Amino acid sequence: MAINTIICATKGSKGCKIAEDKAIEIAKENNSKLIFLYVIDTKFMEKARGGGGWAKDDAVSGLKNIGGVIIDIAKEKAIEMGMSPDDVLTEERNGDIASQIKNSAEEHNADLVVIGHPESDAGFLERHLISKEGTESFVKRLKEKIGCEVMIV
Image (tube, rainbow, N blue to C red; front, side, top):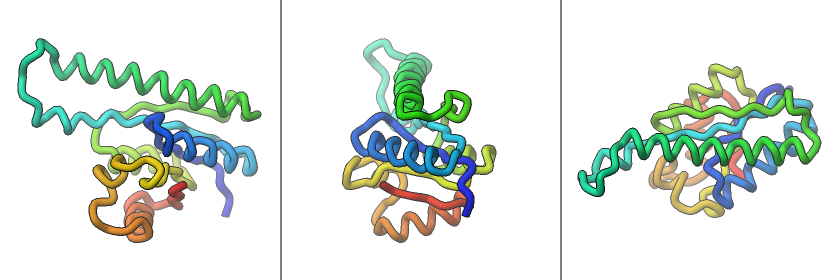
């Protein structure tokens, strides 16, 4: 199978950095385009009580700034590891994490999505995507939802 486009969803954590490295390795081996994706999911704020003088827009702006730094660092790492700057893109999206990974994969006609393993990034995938199913079941379900190969590293 030809791998022309890879999406690597990242939030800059330890598990995501492992996924970034693997995505870079695969992209270099296949001369693929690599897109680092950062998703801003504000669902956690819906239950937050007011106070403190902050607004949801301020929080989203802060998360967007953090995300920009995270994906810029990932892009710089890919270039330092020998990828052409033209082959490394970054993308920020707002919304449900799984849905936005799916949307990005569809829009870019991705062949592969790379995500950090929940054991190396405890909490993120379990909280947002895996629920109580095992990793294999999750990968199968996500692959069906996204429509391309999914690799959890």
